[in-house]
Length: 145
Image (cartoon, rainbow, N blue to C red; front, side, top):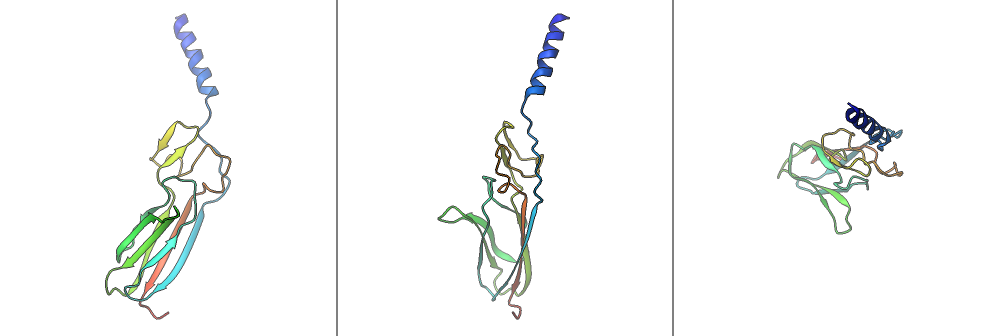
């Protein structure tokens, strides 16, 4: 019985003294909209802003009328969204890009990909880079500009 009491005390002390994974983020999420006009079959590239997520941005809603709609790193290490409409397509298209993918936690012991922390990067005092950031790109192709 003494052993159970000692083990329970040790477990309580360990839980109380562990650093918390939760960190208050007062900054609201950033929602950005980009509108662009393209000629038929014209390609488009958009350099995404820097962010603390080492995985960068991910496409959360894929475009409907693209032959190419991808995110890649350029020679400088920047994440760039690249878009090419389906050949001959005219009309509207859009894509939604966000940094809410897998995250790294400096004091939480690893990666969490289950959305538990809403895509935040913890363990740093620099909260400007780790805000949730969503970019909606509206693309008009071959429509009178």
